[in-house]
Length: 181
Image (cartoon, rainbow, N blue to C red; front, side, top):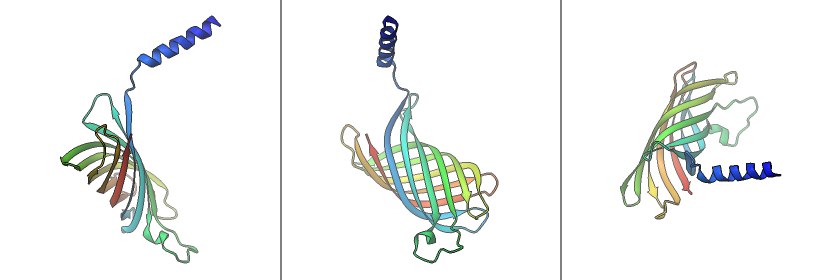
C-alpha cells in the first residue's frame, strides 16, 4: 500500500511541474473547388478538409497545421447513372508551417508551406502514395475575443504537387473556418 501511494504521489508531483511542449490552439474545416491531376488531364473537383493547429516550444511566430483533405471529381456529386463509372479522387495529409499576419482591425492573412503525402486515385487501377510540397495563402476576418478564443473565417487558395511516380497535383479555392480554444 505504501508503494502504491508513493507511486501515485510521484505521478501527481511530476504532472503538476511538467510543462507541455506542444499546445493545440484550434481546429478548422474548409470546403472548396478546384482541379486535381495525376497522369491525366486535370479535372474539376470539390474538396473538403479538416485540420488542427499546434505551437511548439521553440516558436511563437510559426504555428504548425496538421490536416487531412479529400478531393473528388465534381461529377461524382451530381445525380446521374453511375453504372461502370469511375470518379477520380485524392486523399492527402499535410503538415504546414503557418504564419499569421494581422492587417487592419479584423483583417488578416496567413501564409503556409509544408510537406504533403498524397494518395493518387485518378484511375481505377491507380493507387499510389506520393510525397511532395504544398503552399497556401488565406485572407480572412478574425472574430476572436481578447483572450484569442473564437472563430476566424476566410478565403484561401492552395496548391500541392508531388515529386514522384505520377506527379499528382491539385489547386483549390476554399472557404475556411477555424475555431480557437
